[in-house]
Image 1 (cartoon, rainbow, N blue to C red):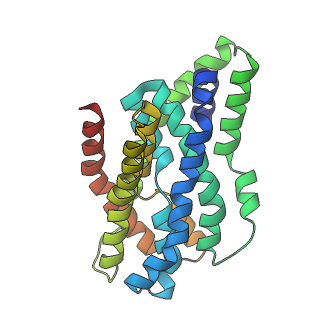
Image 2: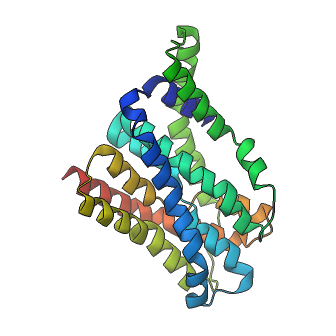
Length: 260
């Protein structure tokens, strides 16, 4: 994925597209940050128990804008859509690796370190620098990057499916919370964003990409991160499964809305 992001930004970045990057990054950061602020209210209304509160809040924040969002936007809108999706994912990553990790760890530190060592952020910045500097990468560099980039998307989807397939579905007391996370991630957040863009008269490709990214299911890495920071990884796993399965219905409907 870092190689793919570097290749996408280095070969597709133009001044015209780059002018839209601040808005994409901003919206990508605002959406999870707003859910971070509202999570305590939802926790209180749903009476979420303390052991599940960090995972519940994190799943509301964390969308699969990387391994699922970038491939889908690339397939629907081409290289332009992939670039927009990468910019949106950059904003989301900033919030998830700071406020998101802080939430999972119960207010722990080292969030700055998570940002500084994240390869996705550095690969995107390196790609932008190459593009705006006017440096033309030689064929012996571009050809391997093209191959890696073309293989990243299907491999990412296969890995995502394999991870979800290994999560056991069993009866538990998470149903009301999972339903709320699913509704919020797949319908409420993209619906609000779509309404705002409609009122503003924004209907370009970059705006459609932002709505699609906001409609992505819970991120695949939520279970790993929850376990790492001693949160409820099982709840994160169940939320990931159901939001991803139901996204097979909701995402095509949103795409159909755009293209119709």
